[in-house]
Length: 302
Image (tube, rainbow, N blue to C red):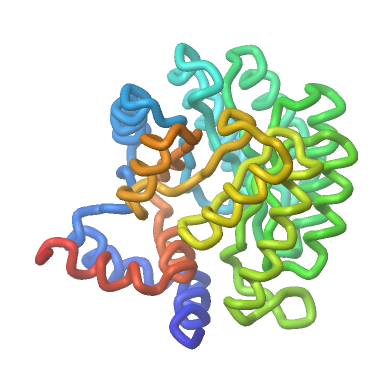
């Protein structure tokens, strides 16, 4: 638990990105496709050819002005254009903070509606990511506005670490908005979120039951075999076929498990991060499973 909290703390310290850059180069960039979109597209093409679904995850910075949020929107739209031939198997995951949510909610809404329209036009997958709890209400508000305009066009992430997650899931399920359930990887105070990993897992399992029973096209984002097995059991109990739900995992993490699930007939979508601002993303991924830290540092020696 101490290591997890340390990694989450470091993920917020951008001044550490430069010394960490040496480590990621040393490790060969095993968890980030690269800094350029084409690097991510090359990996996406390979995964799609093998039967995986994919979602590109652009790692941009939180903008402080309209110009940066516009650039992020243009990047998302360009990615969708490149992925259009693959249909719903391919798509993107967006962070609303990159679209200006922290400083202009209306602008973020306009960008998101434009992106959702493009995704819907191309038949592409779109996931609206959930960030720190300061943005939860505004993110849900925009996701609901998108669904009113383009019903079912976007999947929304909910985080089981948050105490409020059950109520948010109920609201989204009632509206028929697709959900991707994840544990959550942002540092939050104990008043708002569970701190103990076992508590987070138990809450996750309770929410899985709700999602499999009442959700629309459920998605589960985890690399835990224990939680995946539980999800499969709950899906069976509630009469879901393998094609009715999907598992979502990150590029470079538990490739063996991704392959096994795909071979067993389950739908697996791999999120492929790319971009210059990879530092916070990488630390949050390591915080989710600190054992990855050693693989990250010593992959070259394996």
